[in-house]
Image (tube, rainbow, N blue to C red):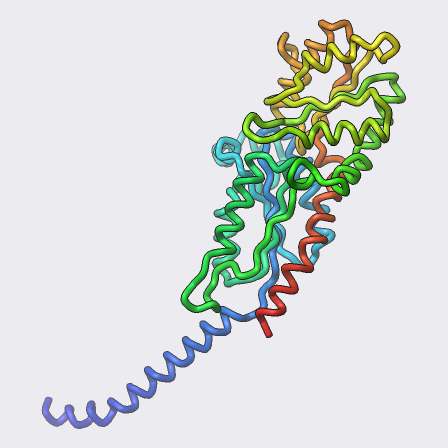
Length: 336
């Protein structure tokens, strides 16, 4: 044993050198991991839907974004906890999956925006564009914007280790602060098909938005004004959770002596989900369709979400295209 000790001591400098080299290699790999260019990402954040037929509206937007941003990883996120839990439960239902082959795997595994962003960051810091798929800057958008701001503002002792150095959120379809003129005008153009369909059938066009009890609703009245300037006075915009509602609008339509006696009801929502199928087009006496019929107005309903309208889906692509240059510029400046 004593004879072996000198040999071990002689090897000690070599062992130390090997350890030092290993640590240097690890450090070099860590620096490369921190700064290596990585594929940028887009996260499309929607409220979500449990309606199988409505999922296609969200997938249509996703496909358009993928086509416009071929060099980006494109991810979906649902902000509704309840909707995500429904899809996670369905993931274990073999009969449901067999009956609905059009639903892709990513919907069954859908995550919230924070979880999606954490998964993206796990591979190293990279540029991330988060695009809201909401119509207005209501509660869902406000929470998403706060999340992105918090992640982007998270600082580390070493700047190179900052998890989200290049992240930004895109505005909802109608913009911020009660709608912005350019965004409102773009939305008006996207709704030209619906307006033409209503005019061809001699119907008033009635759009049902979601609305919000806590935030201003001026954006809806401003969009209604813009639609009327473009397509005539027989365009009405109401909401499920705020004013004006179906009763007020049906009275306005029925009260016009020379106005149309028919109404085309359509959702001003990304998907034609539960609100559209039940609150708008349902058979219950408190649905919009029933209220309009009770007022003596003939009703036609259109169960198609805005996401299935290619022109509306392009709005989100355009928002991302406007957002990307500023974030890319920040990344380029940091990488100098």
